[in-house]
Amino acid sequence: MSDHFTINCIRCGEKVKMDIMPGINFLLLAICSSCGQMLGHYNGRIIQLEKNIVLSSDESKKNRYLRDKLMAIVAEDIKQFLKEEKKRSVRLNFKQKQKSGGGRKITPSVIRKNAPPITQEDVRDFIKIDLHLIDTYFDHIGE
Image 1 (cartoon, rainbow, N blue to C red):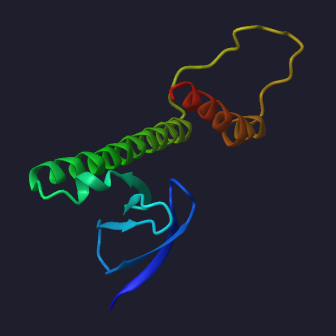
Image 2 (cartoon, rainbow, N blue to C red; image 1 turned 60 degrees about the vertical axis):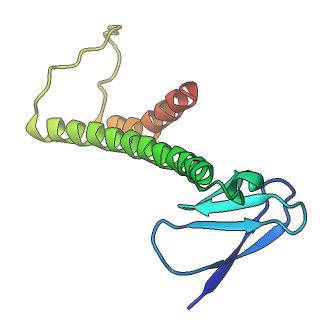
């Protein structure tokens, strides 16, 4: 059974209807009827393609071009997965240290005799709010 969905052309914004067959990791191709841009849809992403290469009779050139386009998407997905896995691993290690009571004793770098002690609620707020903001800040620096 054939199904379809609609995407917006990257170049002109025109709606383009794509007919699909159910499957896993497939590349869908369509040409925008408004501006003629060749579009691909792979793994949830819309990509701009060179029509003259994709429609070329040179199978070797076409395959190499499409492989390179798809591998760029796969490499980006792997990078994102590893980044998320690293964050998950750090959180898991932190939780394990908390449960075991392990790790070295943490002392403040600036000592204020009259400062109140840091509470469990302070730590939870830091992990839930501030740590995420710090991660987001460093993510943007790496871009």
